[in-house]
Length: 248
Image 1 (cartoon, helix red, strand yellow):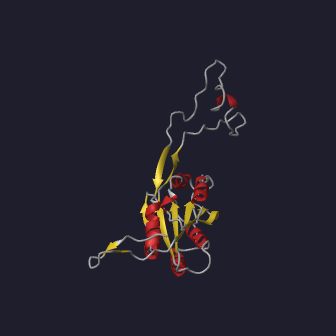
Image 2 (cartoon, helix red, strand yellow):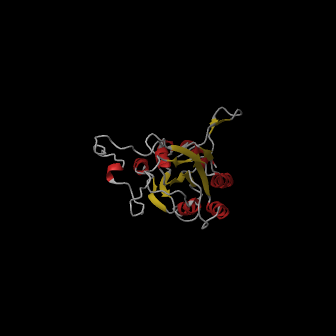
Image 3 (cartoon, helix red, strand yellow):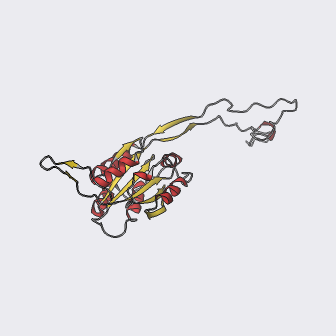
C-alpha cells in the first residue's frame, strides 16, 4: 500500500502518519513509433506499488491493447520490450486512442483506486472523430487523470540524389540499364573497361529535421492540467508520472 510522507506533530511525542493513498491503475498509451518504443524500453516499473496495476496500449491511426491491466510487472516489462514502433504512420489519432484507453478501466469510478493514463507521442493528431474538449469531459467524469510526454518527430528531409532516367532512341524514358545502376550486393557493375560507373547521389548526406507537434502538445498540456496529470517535453519520467497520478 502506498503511503504519504510522515508528518511530525510537535504537540505529541509520536510521528503522525498521513492517510494511506489508494493503489493506482495506469494505462501506458504509446505512440507506434521507433522513438517512443526506444524510450519505453528504459522504463523502470519498480516505482509502482505492489497493489498497483498497469496496462499497455499502442496507437497510430488505430489503437491496440498490448497488455490488459495486470499487477505482474515482469510480464508488463516483457510487453513493453516487444514494442518496436515499426507500424506507425506520419499522423496519429491521439484523442481517439485516449478514449480507447479509458475504456480499459472496469466499471464506474472506484474511490478505492486511482485511475490514470499516460500518453507518449511525437506526432500531430490528425482526424476529427474526437476532440480535446470532449475527451477532457469524458476523463473528468470517469475520474481519470491524463499525463503526457511529448517528443519531436525526427524524419529524413533529404536523401541521396536519385539516378535520373535515360531516354532510349524511341523517346520513352525508362530506368537506366543494369550496367549503370547502383548496387549494394556483390561486385559493382563495370562499363566494359573494368571501371565501375559513377553512382548518382554518392556522398550526398541524409539530413534530419525535428518537428514538434505544437498544436497537439498545447491541447494535451491543457487537458493534463485540468485532469490532475503531468505534462513534460522531451523527457520521459515514469516515476514522476506515478507520483503525480497517485497523489492527486
